[in-house]
Amino acid sequence: MPTHEKILLKNMDQPGYTGSLKDYEAVGGYQALRRVMKELAPADLIDIVKQSGLRGRGGAGFPTGVKWSFIPKDYTGPKYLCCNADESEPGTFKDRQLMERDPHQVLEGIAIACQAIGAETAYIYIRGEFRLGAKILEHAIDEARQARYLGENVLSSGVPIQVYVHAGAGAYICGEETALLESLEGKRGMPRVKPPFPATHGLYQKPTVVNNVETLANLPHIVTRGADWFASIGSPPKSTGTRIFCLSGHVKQPGNYEVPMGITFRELIYEHAGGMRGEKPLKAFIPGGASASFLTEAHLDVKLDFESVAQAGSMLGSGGVTVMEEGTSMVWAALRLMEFFYHESCGKCTPCREGSSWLVQVLQRIVDRRGRMEDLQVLADLCQNIVGRTVCAFGDAEIAPIVGTLQYWRNEYEDLIRESTAISTTSKELPVLALNS
Ligand SMILES: Cc1cc2nc3c(=O)[nH]c(=O)nc-3n(C[C@H](O)[C@H](O)[C@H](O)COP(=O)(O)O)c2cc1C
Image (cartoon, rainbow, N blue to C red; front, side, top):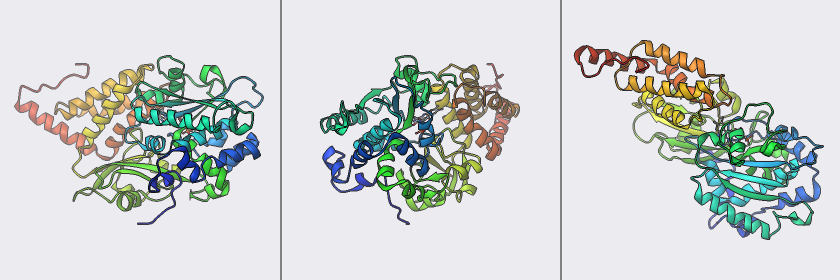
């Protein structure tokens, strides 16, 4: 198996590494922050991150340095950094490992980002179920305050950086950056209409940057080893650095794998994750969390970078790769994912709120052998009426499982519907129901 240098998961792989401040300092921790506070002006820091090519690891892949540069420079009031630790995308579990096993790496990244945008306060919005992660972070913040890496006067620079942990209540939508801000303000977590964007009207209507945990954890390494070093890893110029891919499903060794962007799905699944768990060949995989459209065995040689996965018709998203073996019912898989989206729709936008319920009902009907051939058009029409018609990207995400399965496995839908017709002509117990029944 090819070996690649790990960046983010490196420390925790060392025998005996506990993630304590002592352990983190022993591997060079907080040296990047020292350099930032002593040598680098915020504008230089933003330039370094721009040159590194770092793009957001939360899903959308927006260039981090560019996002920071949208914060108004002449604004003298409070600005905020929010670390998005909501991690609720099904199949994604990398941020949790980063926070639980190497919390100071995340905190150092947060402090560096604060200095770049001139924020004195950062909030870590952590998914409610991550109680252990929240506790570990609280403890690490205490350690960092005592050592003056955080607090009133960071490293005697006169600059204050305060970090607070805020636990959500376990809503998927609160990972969407503006719903996160609403929730942080104590309101019901629902996305805001954009523009205005958080860069000018974010938390409490103040300039705000929202960055993912993994994005922030990269920063100490970029500062220490340089933009060119980072930009040389992966698939330059647009997909630089490593990604932590979360492998789940029918593979031998599920787990988190940090690899340079640009390796193929075949390499990730068969060499890193040990291949399929049994004799059955691979049938399908989700390349980037539940919001990303399915790909097939024919896409195994697609490269794991932003552009290649988009060209293949899906997205790299959050890095959650879920593998399914031959024999998996793709209609059932679409229903299972759709049930999640229906449950998590915040209800703000009618197409998403109503459409997700209808999509579940139609899929359930097909799975229950009560479907009709017209249902395939109904599914396609419903998807068409949701995409692009919602305040946030949730609407586009929730139709992905249906659009993908209809594209590649339409025959499975048709087979189930044919079974329905056979049952309905021989049994009076399973009537064909109308859409609104
Ligand atoms: C429905 C929805 C859920 C999201 N959930 C998460 C999440 O759990 N974690 C995350 O970092 N980003 C999530 N995002 C993306 C964020 O809105 C935002 O783009 C990201 O936090 C920005 O950080 P980055 O630039 O470092 O990736 C979600 C987006 C949507 C539309």
